[in-house]
Amino acid sequence: MLQAFAVGALVAAVCAVLSCFLVLRGWSLMGDAVSHAVLPGIVVAYAVGLPLPVGAFASGLLCATATGWIKRHTRVKEDTVMGVVFTGLFALGLVLYTKTPSELHLDHILFGNLLGIEPAQLRQTAVLSLIVLAVVIALRRTFMLATFDPSQARALGFSIRKLDTALLVLLALAIVAALQAVGIILVIAMLVTPGATAFLLVRSFDRMLVVATAIAVGSTLSGIYVSYFANASSAACIVLVQATVFVAALCFAPGKGLLRSVPPTTNFTEN
Amino acid sequence: MSPPVSNELPLTLAAQQVSVTYPNGHTALSDATFTLTGGTICALVGVNGSGKSTLFKALMGFVTPTAGRVTIADAPVREAQRKGWVAYVPQSEEVDWTFPVSVEDVVMMGRYGYMNFLRTPRPVDREAVTAAIQRVGLSDLRKRQIGELSGGQKKRVFVARALAQQGRIILLDEPFTGVDVKTEEAIVTLLRELRAEGRLILVSTHNLGSVPEFCDQVVLINRTVLACGPTAEVFTAENLSRAFGGALRHFDLSHSTVEAHDGRQVTVLTDDERPLVLGQGGHLEYRDRAAHQKLVDEREAAKTTARDV
Image (cartoon, rainbow over all chains, first blue to last red; front, side):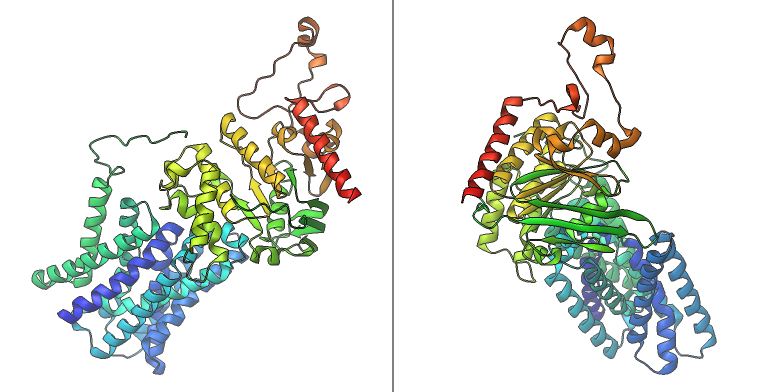
């Protein structure tokens, strides 16, 4: 149980920090796409005897790069391409899974198994999470600039292509780390909801990172706690708590909530 | 105050036979050639689809020309970028105003090129940011989230960023779209100061009337450079009709009833954009002719001095 809390909190923090960038960049679907696309990688890795995270990472990244390549070479819009690529890879994974005799539990891949996590996987998840967290926090200002104003980033001589690739690699690593805890379906929520909630509550980027992380970690701990007593899926409980917090923020956010009691003050003053 | 840059060699921005063909086969610009030297405000004028924004992107190094080259101080654009010389003030429509950043956060982004990879601000960066914010008159609002500013204040945030960056070439994309006349004048005053410091200001605009008011040079674009040089020489009825084709509304006073019964007393009003007024024989009419003449004289004097030295 304590182990579950620790791993859950760590994974939540990593996903929360990344979610801030995804939400602001309009990349929310990217988390969805990459996480679904890891399935064929996991099955293939299992079949040939590679560590599962390696396969997951490779096919997740394949999805992201294939999307980018197709988008650049056709007139089809990015979200459309993404929809085709990730569902295609996910379906491929499902077919491979049924054709490969294995001891893998599809349930665990899809929905995670936080309470039954094994020590080796625990270490893997912890190390991956800490690496991704450290890199994202170190590069947060550069990523923020590339998200907010790519033109300025380019005018300063930064390579947007390299920064985008770096963010995708970090995203794929985070998804691989989170797989064990929450599964590939619900990791999508972890990669969107905390950032979206924090966006409603803050006015500065560093604070957004802190608030998103706090919300994610808080939701994870209470979600696991509730799941233990309600005897429900821990991942589902975590996501449910996150969604509840989001709705609360939507309604009660200071100054911009739907249910604010006073109209927002207009602050327009010419000096 | 950011240090004046006029004591350094004047910076030259040159486009040599620049052509840009996009991967889909569309040639947006061909054989564009012009040279600009620091201490000028130059307008880049052309209709939508004239290759104006493509040229703008090529000058900033965002697109690589398929033929020809762009140089800044005789070196590739890339080198100027690394030195932080190229500053960019985006069009308001391109900015996500809901982004959780404050005025000082945005201005600090101008300093990122000078910082280590963690982008940790040093005291010198903070000073540059404070000075830049003060110069555009936003000191009281430095902690504001950018979406909470008025149209003119929003524009000034990004001008402050270019100042904090100490850019020697400042490119502004449609700076007067959506700002009121008072703000436009405040920005023009600031740009004139920057010109006096020896910076090269390049303004992309379709707002013809404001060009003679504050730009001393013009590059006229329609798929290539049609004309470039001093505003009065480039802004002729003939050049403009080549650049704009049928896209301009003409109102010829001498052929209307206005001239006949009002003598010479005519008032021209427009709601948003300044009208461009040409006099007899196609010469430019300035709102403040004396001030314009003074500027021209000063520039001539400066040129003569430079030649004598």
